[in-house]
Length: 177
Image (tube, rainbow, N blue to C red):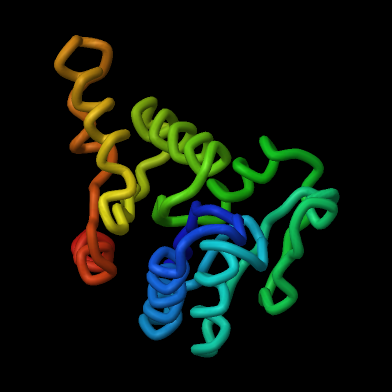
């Protein structure tokens, strides 16, 4: 299975997040899956990729041609796809992925999350979407989504995505599909 990972590329985040990303990458590799990610070599992305590569796993990095002006790109990917824009990058994620894991991140991660959730809601993708809620990172966002449901702005999203607090929980969802 090709598992798309959305998460921060920031170098400033606490190691509790990057350690979990590394462990997720290790698990992806040990279970024989392929990581699909934004190609970054730092933050959550870089840690997850290192977990994959340190355990002889495979990965597909996807990044705009100009991204290395902002952050270093991973050199260990089995395949690296260069694209022209962030929109093309997100389209390539969809073309190359069978499931999505959303880890802590910033506005780029939220953009990717809300786009893939919207595509699933519109029945344009049917893949598993899992929010990896490390240390309650997404609790406030999930509360906001619950409030949107309560006030009639959204239908209940439980069939669109799942929330996991551990790597074991992530793979319970993925392997019971």
